[in-house]
Image 1 (cartoon, rainbow, N blue to C red):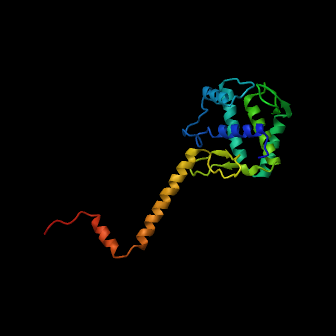
Image 2: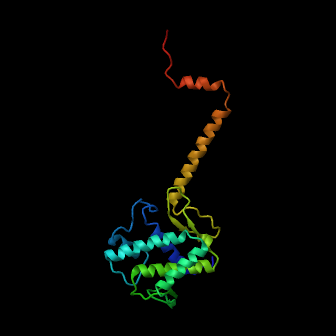
Image 3: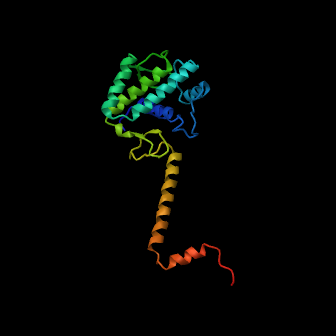
Length: 210
């Protein structure tokens, strides 16, 4: 893995943010629907800098969440165009910073910039690193049929398919049931034809005497 540690952290944050949306969250609900929920989310990620804790900020972060989700689904050329647009619009000025006990890492906005802007720029810079490193194959969509979640596969073998253990277990169960149903159908088709009428009758109420 050739990505810088702060890039990996930002990608994890981006995935967690997008997967808080109703179509991807474990609860099936919007998990940053309130100012308080957003605050708890940021604390969980030790997010520093300006945090206003108001409805305007919440709305802006949710819009950024949608933008990140859309960005994840783009091809490389379209993603590059979108990323460049984000960085130009925010007037990003990349620089090294060290704070809160963290090692040197990259910032491109000031700590007092609006929260949504800082999130967008930091994610854009992380994706720049991913694209430059030729690691875009690690950015994936959850393969669960009923989930629109994102995932970043930082493992050595690169075989991660689902955004959570929950999605993986659910799809494994679906696959197991499909295999069981297929095996049952094969048994019916390959059994002697004379057996089938007897089984059909046995499923009905046995006739009474006379």
